[in-house]
Image (cartoon, rainbow, N blue to C red; front, side, top):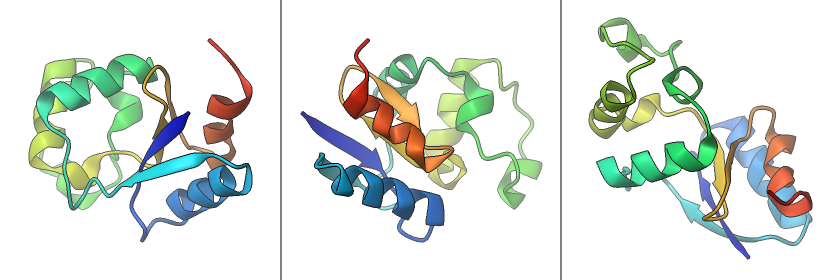
Length: 117
């Protein structure tokens, strides 16, 4: 199984998640989502595998967030914001194609390796 890690190398939690996956023998494909932002369909698919709402996926502490007025319960509004402002996507996210987990804390990414749905 290959795990895609939606990764920002400047983020310590993202670096920790990557190190944990590699230390545990995972085959990891890195997607630097700031360099290669996700499209609408990719975000819809990812959100469905995450089983999370917009509140979990948006970094509301970022300065850009303060200027946006969206309903975090509205998935389509969240998707549109993330398409336009990928820096607002929470990270890291590990995705095996069937399940995805938010690496907060980073150790949570290991659930993809050691649990089955």
